[in-house]
Image 1 (cartoon, rainbow, N blue to C red):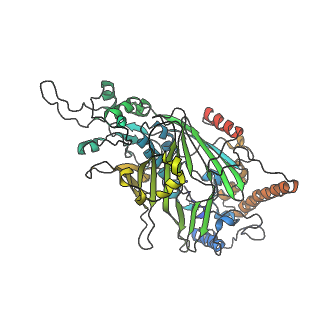
Image 2: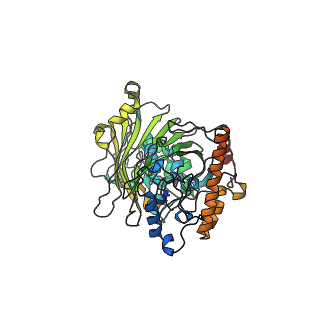
Image 3: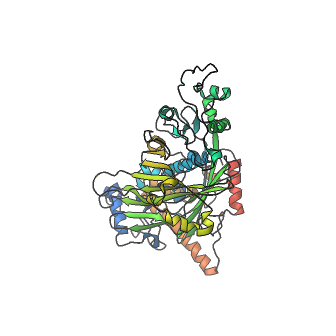
Length: 559
């Protein structure tokens, strides 16, 4: 993925869908000829101030002054300004792959869209909660592979929602209600039947008696019923979900299995390759049993004088999530495109960096064989005020649209009409979203009564980044990220910044020499894992890339 400055610890925003880069990342790329170092290739070492946080920021600011279009410039920063991690290793839209892996388990289209939106808000946790750092710029041909073996969120039928089980900062995380299920809290206020489709067959039917086997499984009492003599049974402690919801639960014992203490695990694998150096572009592919994600990472950045604004480059059309065989609810073939918002690295003049997000991001569902309308989400990030503390506020909606209109007017024309929330007719809106992208985000069905409390979509404060698993270094190929940058990383950890800078220059010089040789011989660079054609933002795996993905999925935990 392309270089930018990033917070230590991840991703851009379902929301923060921009690849927010953090200050170090600020889309600075190593120059092909010169670096900001002394004649000996060492950063100034005459004072501790040079390596302090404020000193690093002042040095970075000195590099940025006078440069408005950072994407067209390339800089070589000394090692003392860098985070000891390769860009392709650090940069990732899967800080919470468990929320990604659970998407295809959703039977209902609106549940599925809520799951995609939730993934979008969680995918870059490191940017919400860590200091802003600059990983190493990727060299041409560099690649990185990793995997996660983890438990996906499990369904708590009594709460009517999903509960994450991995990477928690609290002992008891909030349940994340599904629109298609009724939680006890909502039931006490009056059950809502959130029908997404206009198809009458999909409308929720009145609550029915719970089959005995489900009653035992979820520990609910029967709903109130009237006997033949007219007597009414005692009220329940929690009203049962509607009949369609019950049927969905009965078919989803894999998610409910946690009630017996079992973990529902998935293996998720990722492959990333730097396919271009000028401009810096990388392609990524992520896969698990029944869902895959892919996209192109390229950043465009500009220095405004007091901040660095970062948005997607020309090739970066967002993250594409596609339902594979085994996805539920007739969703096989559905593709969700989640675009990136705009991030800003602020506080350069004060020497205290912080991240903000602005503009809109969109998640659009397309394709699949399921008849009927599709859903689209618009998330709007509120501009931060110059006065007062940052609020990190956002609002959003999920609305229904008719994909057949594309045939007549074209997709771009349709989407141009709905660039902002205010552009969408109220009768098409299914869900309202509000909250803080660094904290609690809630949603409410448009059909819900005013008295109903909002439901938790996600609480960022309860979650931490899930670490990647990477096979041992001795098994890495020469161009794998951790092998390429090993000497630089070791020197930075040892605080030997002079050596780290020299090792970094060795890596960069080797790339220049190889580029010069290709130019001399007229040879074109050939990528290993991805086709070098991705104008629509959807990269294609070469046979070798597909082979690597399949072998990782089949291999043990050391793959």
